[in-house]
Amino acid sequence: MRLHRYIGQCGVTSRRKAEEMIAEGRVSVNGERITTPGTSVEEGDAVCVDGRPIELPRKAYYALNKPTGYVTTLSDPARRRTVSELFPPSVVGLKPIGRLDVMTSGLLLVTNDGEFASKVGHPSGMVEKEYVAKVRREPSDRDLARLERGVFEGGERLVAVSARLTGRATPQRPATVRIVLHEGKNRQVRRMLSVIGCPALQLERVRYGPIVLKGMRPGECRKLGMEEVGKILKSLGSAQ
Ligand code: URA
Image (cartoon, rainbow, N blue to C red; front, side):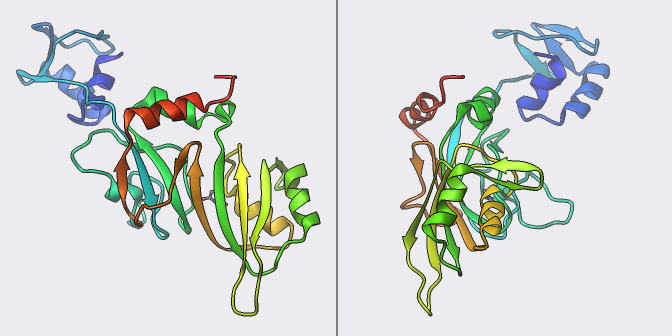
C-alpha cells in the first residue's frame, strides 16, 4: 500500500495532507526518513509520523438502524445530518456499505474493512436486502407478479426476488408490502412501487443478508460479532 494511503487509513490525516507530511520529511519507515512520494509500505513495516508510531485501526463491523432524515454520506455540504454522526466516534475509517435514501430508514452495514465492503456491496454478491413499505393503494397479485418479473423505469430493468402483500389497506391504514431484492439500484424500491401505481409512503430496510433490524432502536449502531461477519461472507453468491 502507498505510504500516504496507509497514513490516511491510520486516521492521522487525509491522504492529501499525508503527501505533504511525507514531502516535509515528517514520516519514517523502519527508522528511515522517507520523502519520496509514492513509496510503498508492507505489512510489518514500522511507520512513524513526527517520531510517533502509527498503526492501522482494527477492522470493525457494525449494523446501524438509520433513522429517516439522515443522509448516507460521511459529510454533507448542505449540512444535513449524516449517518456518520451515529458511528462510534472512537473507531477510525468507518464507511457505510451502499446507501439508503434520506427518507428511508433501517439497516445499514458499516465497516472500516474496505475489502469486506467491496465484496458485500458488489452486485455479484447477490446479498438479499429486504424492505417493508407502506403504500396507500393496495397492490394486486398481478402488480406484485410484475415486480418479480421485472419492470422498466428510467431505462433500467428492476427486478424483485419476491414481493408480498403482508398487510391489507383499511380506510385508516396503508397497506404493507415486503420486497426482497438482490440488486441495489438507486431508489430501487420506491421506483418499482411507483411503476405499479403504489408509491411508498414509508420505507424501511429490515434485513441485509443474514442480519436483521429487529430489536434495534432508531440511531443504534450495534457492533457485529465475528460469527455474524462470517455469516454475511458465507451468504455471498457463488460469483465471489
Ligand atoms: N430502495 C429505495 O427506494 N430506497 C432505498 O433507500 C433503498 C432501496
